[in-house]
Each structure stands twice: as C-alpha cells, then as structure tokens.
Image (cartoon, rainbow, N blue to C red):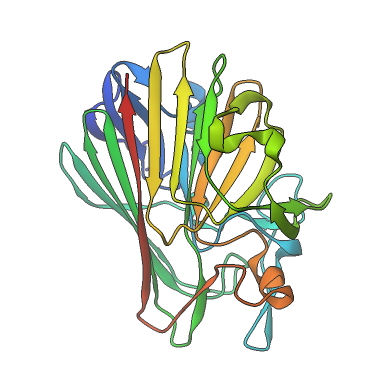
Length: 298
C-alpha cells in the first residue's frame, strides 16, 4: 500500500521513516530531534509522490536522458517523459514504483523493486533493485544495488537524491575537480574546473549557490553545516559514486546533494567523450552496488 510505513528507531526524535510504496523513499530522517532531510508533512505523506519526501533512489539511471531517447548496441530505445514540464526521461523509474519489504527490524530494512522490462516506455531492460537501510542513533547508511536480469548486457546507473533544508547561513563543503556546464535544456555540455567563486572546497553558502550541475572527480565526501541549528551532517559515498549533483536552491527552503554513478544524459556524453560518463555496462546477472552514509554531529 502507498501509505505503508517502515520505522527504524523513533522518526519523531531520532530515527527513519520509509515509504516503500512511494518509490522506496525516505520520508523522514531525524537525529537529536532535528530533521536531517526535508521533512514530509501529512499532505506529502499522503501524496505517494517521492519528490515531496526526504530522499529517494535513482535507478536504473539518474538525472536526464535527452528527450527519452538513447541508442544501445545499435538499437534505439524510447522512454516516456516522466517529469512534469520536461521532455526528457528523468531519474529512472524506481522512484515512481512500489517497493516490497524484504526484511525489517528496529535498525535495518531491505526494500526490493523488480522491473520486468516490458515495452511500456519506462526502461527496456529487466532488473532487480535493492535498498538496504542500516540505522543507529544519528547515523544512516543506504546501500543501493541494481542487478541486470536481462539476457543481454544492459546499461545501469545508481544514485540517491536527498533533499536538505537550506537554513540560515548553511554551508556546503565539497571537493571535486570538474563542473559540467549545461545548456538551456538542462543537459551537460563540457566539463571544466570549478569556479573559484563557488568556494565549495572551503564551504560555500548553500542557499545562494545557483547550481543545478554535476561535479566530477568528487572525493566522495560532502559536509553540510547549519550554524543556526548547531548541526553538521557528513555524507560519504563509496567510490562507485564518482559524481555528485548539487542543486541549490531548488526552492526557498531546500536543496539537494546527490551521489550518482554517472553524469546526466550519459549516452550522449559517452558518444562525445568515451569513458567520461560513468555509465556502467552489466552482463546478465551482474550487479552494481554502493553505499552512502550520513553521520550527524552537534
């Protein structure tokens, strides 16, 4: 059911609330009585819309595929637009699917999503995606896995899309080598050095970054500091997440920092610059996996 909730700890004080039926999303993550992710109000919880919750998985790809079209091993595939106002296919199809609860206790949960690859415009290759959540007070680890269940090699990607509150004077610290410029269709063009004015390696002002861009050559660590809340969150990601999307501000109250395995529009980037996209090729039965960790401190 859409409103089924899986609870780890006490999500009103220190814990996690998951909504398997709403894209396998994290509706709430709190530590010390404070929201780490954007909190979901009653209307958001009832909506079943992952984009209104705290965080959601990106599978079998992240960000955009231009106009929902890509060519794989000489065959053109078309995906249906799935984002209001966008001509592109965005963020895969897992965040719009219901996930099954494969296991659950007070500190752990496993959610599974099986996609059959039918010709419905969602994704042409069958796969199984798994999310494992490991919680302890003030800490959360999310392990994402995708297994190719097609009889042929298939492209694959993973990511996690947490929303963070902007707050007053919130600082984001990220170390990366390159920033991908983008065109007016929100698609990547070329990558170059990060502008020094962003000061991300020294702690940029999260609310005024003016970014919706992919960073590459990321060291797998991002730190958010809320001085008005006396709160710091360190997010670390396994090396498979070699890129990070930074989108802030997305509204007057929140932004996003998303560990991802590949850049936006990866098929087009790979055609222009082989090896630059990060898109994985999985043999039949092969899996791609990685963990993102969140550690809070006061």
